[in-house]
Length: 351
Image (tube, rainbow, N blue to C red):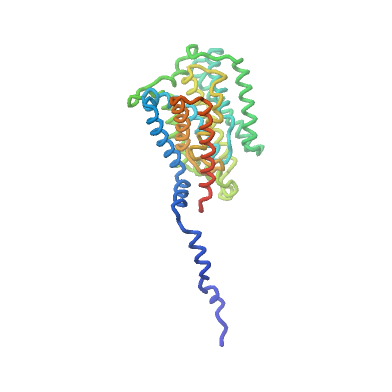
């Protein structure tokens, strides 16, 4: 009798227990379906939280949905929302920037002092401030990419450097808005949209979201940002210059910081070294709540906008409810922990 062909064993039927295991691993339950949806669309969960929050606070206090209050919320969110774009870009690369708030304040102080102390025309002072914001991004980017230092350590150090430079340039004094050229406080002027007064700073912030969202979703640069954040080694093997991508991200983040400084001056009608003292943590909070993964490679800027709005809505709604600032801070802290926990859960989705 002839021996069986060697390929016969390869064609042998799969044992029943293997079929059962494969079926069990691939079984779709309602929870795995929800997790897969949230993994694919990170902005879904913050959008749901925002809608529910607005409804609840609107029912608790009728003044919450008043046009004047909605205008106040948008103005409060503008600065954090704009800085959130810069932070989102960095976190998408699996980094973090603890210095965005202090860099923004430094840029605003430079703008104010260049216009009032050095007598520069408004547009020139603005360009100088934008250059300072860009320089902060360059410094962070070079330290991360050229010296291979962890972004956390780099930006923790530059946080202190930018804060010290702010105090040095300002001598601890605030530059009042009425002493500046009108172009520098223009972002604080309002325009009525559907009965709600919106500042030009808010409109600039929305424009930044549109531009950066398009760049991330529709350009090769955006795909490289996601690839570098998801797996740097795999990105290198596909021919992506990861260090160049990281440096470009910090450059764009620095430019956004400079623009945000202009928005901050308009909002406060002046440049103060004590402005936005909690901006660094508030920005990271907005990004995390917005669904961007701290491990990189997943998220988008629109989720960050929703996260910033959620923080603004919670703080405003709790204030109208008569709760102390202590409980507002407590609520934001709980939101952060819940958001990170959800992110960890979503990351377990089977590819």
